[in-house]
Image 1: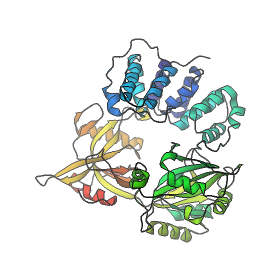
Image 2 (image 1 turned 45 degrees about the vertical axis):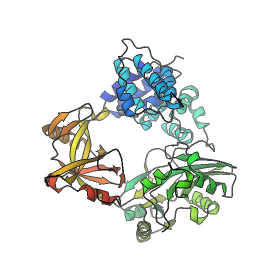
Image 3 (image 1 turned 180 degrees about the vertical axis):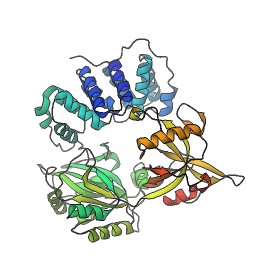
Image 4 (image 1 turned 30 degrees about the horizontal axis):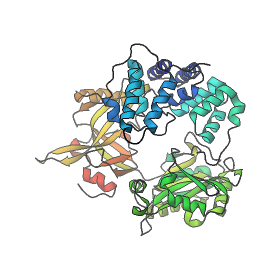
Length: 511
């Protein structure tokens, strides 16, 4: 076997960006994995934009300011890249910033112009060639000639795309099927799709579990005797910041377990804190923050027995027997839509987001958002104005895609001015992308390296999950999970929602 060349992977990335077809993208990924030789693990993770290092301690400005002349000849290997990224992730103590910049500049100095562009996107977590981890998993299955379901299950249990690529290409199906659930190793979480109606889902399923949807941080808790590990939704280890969760888990009557749940801060009135306040509490010292309360809703393993293939009805019974009421998310088995809607009303009345509706016969399965778990939340909408637009990449190459959103404030002369709240590229159809590209080029005032700036004339209706404080944007707030509903040609910029209206959605005072 040979160690993969970075130049080959960059060529594959460029080909992915130019190719709109999904099947052809998968073919390109297959060729890239095979060309990487014994570093197919790194090729898989780099294509998915997920290097093995959990956190690269270098910011956008540092990457932007690393002005290094490109090399004329391609010489870098994937191992070279991995070694440099390891320095970015692990350098600490006095002189650590200098060590990181030396590693970054040294890597870029050995890279060609095309390789530099690829590395900058990789370091910043902004791969723009349109290949998701799911698509790379499909490529792994085809490269190894194994069923995609086998690859996805191994990926769920190992949560390591690189390891799955190596196992598939060296050991085939038997090696993948040997991957098991391990207490202490993160498991990819099961996800939910979104729907607008509890009634619709309950009528479809017949009998279902309707569960409060808490606006907390997703956690996965692994217990092995006195050893407790707490993972985030993205499987980052936050045990050192989760003393309350660790204490609650240690008190449960079992030796081993893997629990799925949420953690959030609760007020003295019994109402939940806002999501952003729960998240900021994690960064405070133990004595300076409120208790962070865990609430569990699923059980994947207990005392040597894996439960992921059992139906939710069985897992729910085991969870109820193991975890006391005050540590479980309230849920009710319902047989009719009216009962399900009543649970949703109760959840909202208690200050939570909405509900989850789950099929009783569903096993625990990670990966694509399926129909066995659905989340139902009231939809918030805003009318905002577009301030700038960024060019798309991958299948959106050649279209203006990511729009900058602005709310209205009163200027010194009483005329409306606009302040940026964030960006979104969600919810756009191909027809919408084509239309808005032409429209915003008509409104263009100037360009910079990142965006086409436009006259603030086009109103857009946005759906969002909420509003949170932010130092990143001048309005002091940011939108959570904003997506486009449609463009409003019937409204003028003077009619868009004000910054104070936006802040009020997040329970924040006027500016």
